Amino acid sequence: MAFEQEILELTNLALVFLKEGKKEEAAAKIDEALLKCSRASYEAAKEAIFELNRQLAKQKRILREIRKRIETFPEPLCFDIAHLLNPLLKNIENEIANLTAKKRRLSRPEQR
Image (cartoon, rainbow, N blue to C red):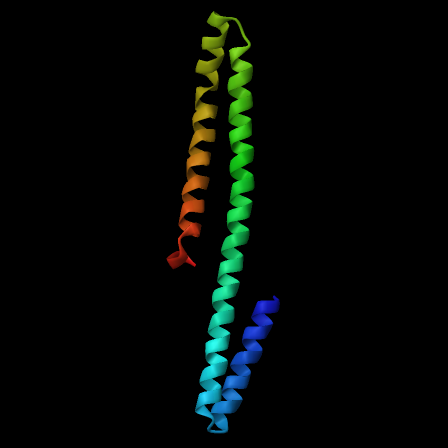
């Protein structure tokens, strides 16, 4: 919200300068507002990447724990359980892939 308020104030100042015929000052305020927009976008992307990393780590932990527990069962039962849980494991793997793809997209500067 702080970025939005600052951007709004800078834009309003630019309008005042334009009305007064001070084009250079108005351009400077517009440039400053654009810089604030860029910074806000960067901060939002950074925050989103942090959250995605947290979700990704959680999903990977869950997947590792499930696989580790499956391996503790005797071999014939282990295969049966693995077969039954395979759809769940695939869903978790897909979620990990989706989170990784989102993180990759957010990490690209041109996406911000």
